[in-house]
Every structure is written in structure tokens, then in C-alpha cells.
Image 1 (cartoon, rainbow, N blue to C red):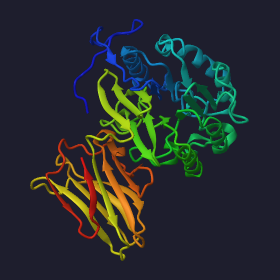
Image 2: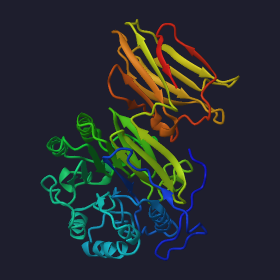
Image 3: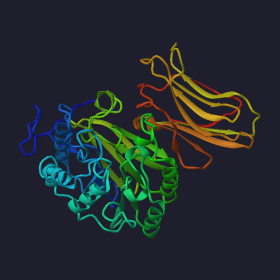
Length: 450
């Protein structure tokens, strides 16, 4: 975490809230000759009927931060939910004229700073933008520049664009022709179409896929309305993993989150202005309004999360860096069933619990990791894959504190890393690694790195 406060200047006559007008924010840039740098953000839902939610003010602050980036991004990805798009009662809006008026007012006003960046914008609809056939029609009218190369029935909603080494696929996960009656049923994807596009563009060095809703739950928000139905999400992710896309970018949950599954990052950035959930974020105070600035190159993907006053609140990179992480590799012959096996604990002083505990639990054992911060009452837990102990196995566990809750990862054998599952919005947050380590003699550590 970076604690120094960065400042930003005002833009287009918007008040500067007392901050400096001179300081710029340094963009992350590609470290090799090939690559690109850009900004991703989503979820501002401009124009909620209830007073005092502050969506417009939050968005203006995020836009000011984007204008402070030096150099400016090569392009921007907006990940959906730009307008309110619903009735005053929060129901679906079937009135095309009122939707057209909403877009006509909001785009030249609240979204003018995005236009003023004068860079390409790759956009997808969210559930607030296209909740009905009428709103899909209006979306197509308003954004008629979107490529008409999506699957049948989703032209102008779902699309792809190739620019040199870069492939971007944008997906409308609430497309009416996929049969979703309303958002509460979760996101849906035409997996075969995505597979075909990725196959046809397999030579693209950098592949980003955009969709409004997360595939994997964020911060414990597991209800279908906050993600993608597993009937669609699981085969969709299998396609992304098979083609080893660079990342899946999404929003919908009002939070920032980075997690990895089958070696593919899911980056959630729902911080453009919407207030939702207790305290306005999901959850507050851990989450905050923000945008994400990313850079990709031949080495990998990096990003910085900039809050509404330009502070770098979080940073990430993938693949895992060599420094600043802990990693343990375990190797074992076949084992008899047992209710629990502790593989490793890390303790500091006389604290009530180990700061790190790695175990296999259950007669069909599952990997579990608990992390403890002395400032908390109890440890928090992460749950991983089942391990078949009837046969020899190898298991690697890694902790990267910079990745937050997604920074507790594991791999079985030579499989790609995946983040373990948790419902907390933070990861290993203690400043220091444990002082003392105890390891299993039954399942030895064959490699330990920090």
C-alpha cells in the first residue's frame, strides 16, 4: 500500500476541492518495445433518483485523476453502467424517449472529461444501460460506432477489435437474446463465439476480455445478481484459460479486486462513482471510488489503483514477482485419510493465533489457509482445491500481500495458479512476515522462498 497523498488539478471548470493544480500522476508504461498502457473503470450510474448519493461528484473526481496521468492513456475501457437507466422505482425502463434524453444529457455533460482525453474508448453495456429490448435499441443508436461483429442478435452490444498485437473483446453479459429476464439471474455469455474469436486471433500477443459482471465472486458477494451464473461462467472461464487471455476486466461490484483463476487474472473495477451497499461501497470502508491504470508488455501485466484524490491505494503485477511474496512447495507420497493435517504455521511472539496457517482438512482433504492480523479478533480463512492424497502429489502455496484477498494462491503440480476463495476484502495485511516457522514432518516443505 502507498500512503503518500497524490494531488490532482481541476478540469473543465469543475471545482478542485482544494487540491493542487500542478501535480501530475506518473503512468505505468510498458517495459519492453511491445505493449500498451490504458485506463479501465466502470459503474457511475449517473442520475439516481434519490438525492445525496453523489454519483456525479464521485465521477468528476475520478475523471480529474485520469486527466492527471502523464502520459495520458493510449485508450480507455469503460465497463458498463454509465447511466441510471431505470425508472424512479428502480424498475426496467421501457420508455425509449426518456432513455434517449438521458443519454443526450449525460454524455456531453458528466462524460465530457472522458471525451476530452481524446483517446479511443472501448465500452460495453451494464445492466443499468441495457436492461430491456428498448434500452438495447437505444444503446445501438447512441453508440453506432461500436463494431457490428458480435454474435447474431448481439450486434452493437458484443464486439471485438484487433489493433496490432492487441485484441479486445467486449461482451454484453445481459444481452436479451441470451434469455436473461432480469439482472437478478446473473450474467450470460455466448462462449462458442468468444472461443471462435480467440481462435481466429490466436496470434494476438495481448488479449483483454471485457464484461460487466465478475465470473468469480468478489468480497463474498456470491448472489447471482452480483456475478455470472455458473452455467455460463464456468465454460466461459474455461475458454479464457485455454486461450490464456491477458485478463478479464469487469465491474458491477462497487469495489476493486484482483484475483487469478487458472492463470488468468479477473480484475474488478467498479469504482467510477456509484454508491451501493453499506456505506456506499461493497463493503465500506475497505473499498473506495477509483480507476485502474494498467500497462502490459512482454514481461507481464501491471496496474495501479488510483482513488478519487489520486492516491495509489493498491498496486499489482502478474505473473507473481520474485520479491515481496512468500511461497512454499510441498511434496508427498500417498497418504491415509485423516481429518486434518497442518502443513505449516508462522507465528510472531505470543500472539493468540499463527499469522499464517496452511492445512489440509477433511477426509477428502481441501487446502485451507488462515491469516491473522493482531488488530483483528479472529483469523480469516481462504479455501482452496481438494487434494487427492491417495496418490503422490505436489502443492505450492503463495501469498502476495499486494494482491489483497486474491493474493492467497495455490497450484497443484504444474497447473497454473488460482486464488483461493474468501469472503473478506483484504489479504495478508500485517507489515511483517512471521518470526518463527513450524513445518510438517509428514508432508515436507521442499522449497520455501521469500
